[in-house]
Amino acid sequence: MPQSFKTLDDLSDITGKRVLLRVDLNVPMDSGRVTDTTRIERVLPTIRELSGKGAKVILLAHFGRPKGERVAEMSLAPVAPAVAELLEKPVAFADDCIGPAAVNAIAALPDGGVLLLENTRYHKGEEKNDPEFASQLAANGDIYVNDAFSAAHRAHGSTEGIARLLPAYAGRTMQAELEALGSALGEPVRPVLAVVGGAKVSSKIDLLENLVSKVDMLVIGGGMANTFLAANGTDVGKSLCEHDLADTARKIMTAAEAANCEIVLPDDAVVAREFKAGADNKTVALDAIPADAMILDVGAASINTVISKIDAAKTLVWNGPLGAFEIAPFDKATVAAAQHAADNTRAGKLNSVAGGGDTVAALNHAGAAASFSYVSTAGGAFLEWLEGKELPGVKALEG
Ligand code: AMP
Image (cartoon, rainbow, N blue to C red; front, side):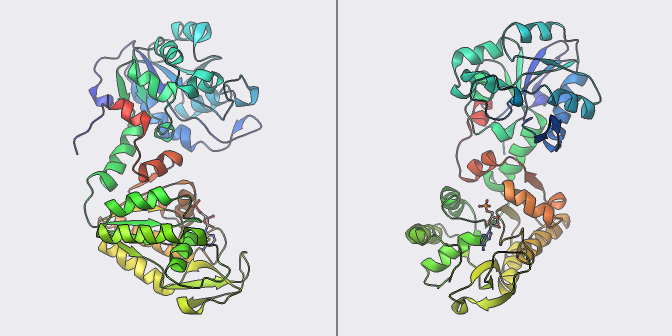
């Protein structure tokens, strides 16, 4: 696919140039210490590359939701030493992202130096995408690089507004994410299989509607499958089920048929009377779900079907677990399918892209995440992309 955005490969001599680099440093913290460094690690390659080429690297990031106020607990100050430790290089900090504090810190930055500016959301203009705020940010740089795909679904000053004011490029992590997503739904190798699970249809209507128009097979599992089964006349007992969405489910099935997308619903179910680990359970046919029980996973027959669909696919897009994977043994189908997809990926037979909060946890639980072709940790941005929505932060890079 021709790339519609510029990358670091398109930058020539950047020695001494001020590069404003938007990153996602919205890391989990406890008592002023970073407890999970995944997001920091993801942006290190871009920081290293820019710094290695002699640029003055100025990091822009948000933290939490201070709603335009200076909320002390949402300062990025404690994140600077965490970045420095992983980067193995000093990271300066300025206590404002615009104005004299930023200007002075940038003036003091040597070529190749790295500086973190305070939380962009301390200013109301950030979330409002106020042009005045964006131009104050842009005034501090010569070049803009966005490496925060996870913030790209928001049209904010530091993600969208600024990209319109400076020469704009995708960082290495953004580039990898966009390339992976493009290979999965842009111009994928067919057949394409989507596996969608999770709790509710209501949170994924747009996503399902978009996928049926793009993929060849759509496996629906998890709690949301119950709504589809019920819409087809199955009595799902006490299962999580959005009966009011029966029409929506039917519409999605009709749209799938029209688009030649095969919808694959569970063939059987693992049921229990309690939602808890180790609860007494049994596998039943769909016409034998006890009135006082709930479906907590898909059964063995369904696992075999999902595995056969994975074998039939060359591209896989996955969001959402097939069952209540947090409580054993209801993690069985999710683990089996994830491991099978991982095996096929390792064997070079499958391009597998997965994402969304619980999906990352589920694939990690299955020990499968590392073998997937790409696992997005982007959450909201990944879901909006699955919904087929334009991401303003990405659009702005495309010019
Ligand atoms: P989501 O955030 O929509 O991807 O939903 C993930 C959640 O769906 C997980 O916490 C699972 O435990 C839950 N889930 C999956 N299958 C079921 C099910 N059959 N019944 C109830 N909850 C489920």
